[in-house]
Length: 332
Image 1 (cartoon, one colour):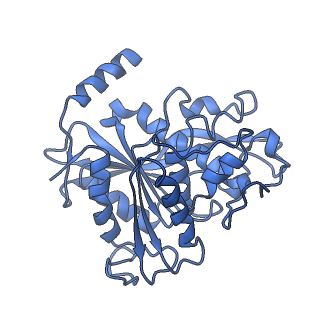
Image 2: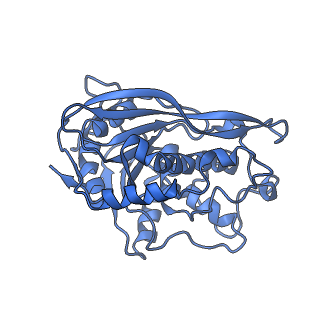
């Protein structure tokens, strides 16, 4: 299997890849693809059962669709306690990128109500570390399964690269709010983070998540994200190791300066950490905008236009050149 994968990778690496500034292709949608399984447990982490983890795929179709395409993964918001794939803003974004030559994936991941298994050593641990307290803290109990699943999606997409016509090293991930925080953690964390803290004996669903495939991404598009889950994994690390380094994925961040849910200070914290690396971090301050300003129009307005509820293409239009640059795509 891996022999053919490396042949595929060699061929695709020698090719020229392009995507389009304007909508060029029709989009076919396949719903409820299973990308793996995760445990859902009683609140005391007993009587755990396996649940399917699903995504919707948005695939470009029509004449002249490239044989090999980049991937764009979308993670819904909802505080890791609510929400689901199929939200209007993510459907709009998935169609935006798919119509320009990407294969887009709108994902579900486990939420707080699923009581996903967390590492045994931290089940009764005080989640607020005294070493490095922060202002905005997602719950470890819900953050751990959410990021574990988000990284599993990347491994799934990479494992299916030849089937879906995707270049395995041209993967971008995006999200909003908690989904953006999951995406940022995916782009910054170590390969074994949110994966190796639990054994296969404890969690028999782990082998369904393509553990032998890497979960690194080449770019992150974040909408009002936080550094919370990057900080959490460090605080649960006995060695307290920083996750910021030159191997992190480049990030483009959109954040309202009036955001009262995830203060823009959390984005600035990531920016400051990136300033100590050689990695590109680009922030777009949405002036006058509060949390979840999907209808930002590029000039300070935050009202929704007619059309797809809660979605305006302005931020995706801004992000497209950034994504193209860091995925080494020709934008035509």
